[in-house]
Image (tube, rainbow, N blue to C red; front, side, top):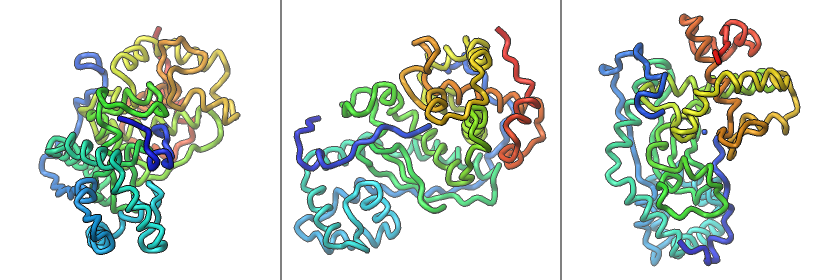
Amino acid sequence: MSTNNSFLRNLSLFTLGIALLLSGCDGNKSSKKPDVSSIEVALQVQRFEHDLLQVDTANLVASLQQLQAQYPQFMDVWGNLIMGLGSLEMQPEQAMRGYNAFLHDTMARNLLAESYAAFTPFDKAQEELTTAFKYYKHYFPSKPIPKVITCISFFERAAVTYDTTILALSLDMHLGPEFDYPSSLPLYAQQTLTKEYLVPHAMKVMYGMAFETTPKNSTLLAEMIHNGIQLYFLDLVLPDTEDHLKIDYTAEQQRWCQANEADMWKFFLDKKLLYATEMLENRKYIYPGPFTSGMPPESPGNAGSWVGWQIVRKFMQENPDTKFEELLELDPQALLTRSKYKPKP
């Protein structure tokens, strides 16, 4: 893909902001998963990237008005907040100029078309999402099921939610290793931009929609537990999904963590990091990266979140009657103590 394009140069490119084992090697395939076969989920899916391609640029105003009627909430979320084209409701003249430039841009149109083609038919992804939402409805019956809208974001984010009604999936963030991603996306992020990560990315942002939690305090332990609970949520709604897909690792990185779990835990204890409160320092251990600071170069980034995940899993093994909502309210230190977490070398 060429980047010598005036429209693209005016776009802000962001890295994947997801703070995101082979069969027989993954220890989390749940044997106690609930039977959700009787739960009904009629998932609505709209293909915005395709419908946007059908806009008649020779009759732009009327055609965009028709599209907005089809996507009454999402048009401004996508056009204004994600793409920066302007709001058709609040800034119609600016938005018309933005959409006109976008829809006449060859690279933008190619990306829309390629993203649509890569996920057509959408049957497999829709089936996986429907199953995930059956588990979601089982555990959280009062939570609404959103409408799913597929789109592109020009590599800004993998998925986004709006209110409780929309789950938008950026297909351009899941086009696979053969796609020529921009250099602004680091290699450690590009490894997760494949189709198999689409549903985990979707359900990860669903956690934020449903619970909107924040760490209990400013310690690294609280951050690790907070992220671990989010990953445990994925255990519930994606019980058959490989662990590496949930945390945005490769299968090899997941195996490395399993093989070195005791040493990883010892690292945090020996360095007295669990109760550190310096935000910039703590980010080294709970954010994606090429590796985790202070650990071997073979380590994946975000190792602190992976360890936090294992602590939460161990807590639930020791306290299986704990409801998920109760888990969210626990003090991180109390959760650690009650988990009896002590990985064996």
